[in-house]
Length: 198
Image (cartoon, rainbow, N blue to C red; front, top):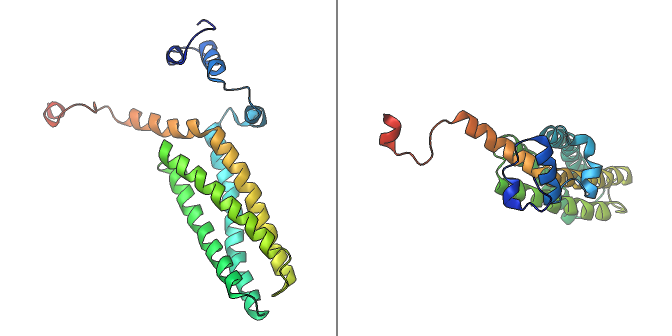
């Protein structure tokens, strides 16, 4: 394959050397994320799933701590707005855990992975706002406020890392589902019912 190959030529790569040239043409393998996640390149889908598993552990901790925070705010005459914010955020984290697991395990289309990636970034920013709100809040127990704020900051950082790894390996996550579907189905998509019945 020549160095002046185009994107169309890249679709016909047949061996590892040609694929390396294709990746060079497409601009893959030379960015900062490629260097950062080079140890994950051997198993990109597994790396994304492991990163999501770690994220799930912190989501469970945050979900439990959200309700503990509400209880301490009730004792310490805390603001109703902050009580609602901590409960609502706990519910959002729980929904993220279910939705993310469903998308990554059962429904990794390009649209759903892109939607999930955007949702992860939005919820990460919400956690950063919660950190800044609860970190120096005086009502309730100061210790519980700090734990809740630090968990929110931890989730912000973990969601940020997960967004980077999912964004970097999104093609591997999406194509893995497409490959498994095509391997299971030997039926021509354009065939009519009569042609399939024969």
